[in-house]
Image (cartoon, rainbow, N blue to C red; front, side, top):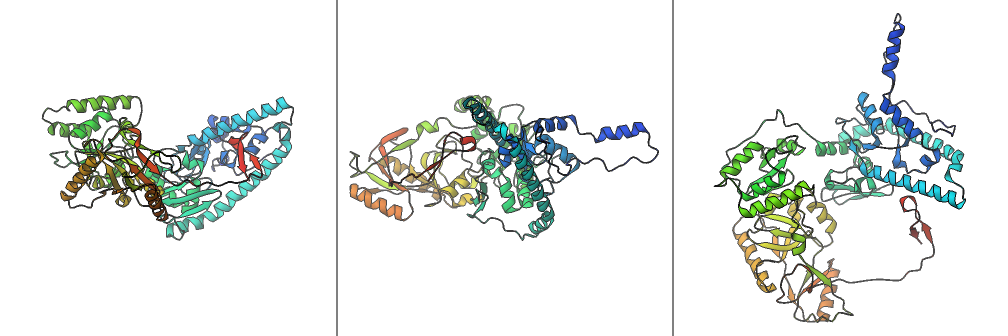
Length: 585
């Protein structure tokens, strides 16, 4: 009911009263008690009154994603079910007390936990502020305020509400057949690399990661393989998408779990992961202790994880560890015993103690574990322009510019970092092919024209098997020598030694270069690379030192293409872009 408009939108009661009716002979006190039981809780009544207090023109101008289908109004605290539908939190909580299905899709919910949609809430609040500002501007300028269109708004709301109810009824009528098709596998799931359009958004599967261009997916945060939205559920099927999200958000209690403990005498080379709150030390200190003992610390559990250390209130990592026959589940005291048995003194070295102090500082401030020194160390290139550049590239070292992800390999701690100093969660079996005791600068590369697929793989935190497609292309060894040619030779020796010491497949190789003969050589080579789908070229001054930051000794060469156009007209921005330039024609 929208007050002041005289319009009622009637839908089936989402909170039906009890089916038990009073039998004959029931006294008035019992009838009164039954009426009290059938009343809605105070928090539900309060939120319904708050939502119904919105003026009708406000709900009329709101995007459909802001409207709760249970409350028929703009949401205050949106929450999402595991099938991707979003509702007012109090309303869906009340619904789930008596139902185990999603009210919009009618799909069964084996897990009724909700996910707060903070991104949508921020969008709604921002939209409200803009609407209020527009109303104030209209009043100051003497224009017709939006509130004066209440009758037309009420009519539109009524028609929109009836259409929405009809859509819900149609969906519910067809949901049984759809659910049966999903179980029988008759509906089409996305194939690797496939894209589909849903409304105005693009849903795709790249590198094993399902993604959508809608705001609900893009602003959700967290790991990219742990996001969902209603468009994914529509394309993949609600039941299949719900099953995927149940696996992602599965959370088990540590109590009563069977411990698997083997006689491990050394942590050297073991892949270890932590979950839950540790009692005797911070997570950062535990990471440093594990690395001191030669273990490789990962942020997520994969099929190659050897040890999972469990603290209080563990997360979904515990469920993954239980599902793996290879992973051993340790208590915190098991880990302490193992670190003491792997160290003669039972305490880390001075250098590790410094890293512990630095890591604890980051942990106490709530920042993500990272190496803040990496961004300052990495050498970056300036752009090379054929027309106005004074540099003669004759004699410079020329190589292809790869469209991948820049990576910094610390062979001393055996950690792989991004250009921003954030950890890259490569699987253990992939890291084993990289050399120890040397620092390497390179690019994680999947191939020409496959930048997006590469990023979808390397940004995941579960170390998927698709890492076997990724190559670490090495082009420098920053800390080995002064001149580039000497550093290049050191990197080559380290890679050859790592190749000879293991029979496993190698995922790292040295990036070749050629001696440049002049500008015409650069132009012809650039055309050749671009015809083959490459990004461009890199020019490096011979004998140059490795310096952090932008350097004139390293230049990048890319074609710049432009053209002219005539703007015939333009549109004003809408929604959150109100008052800005919109589309141009």
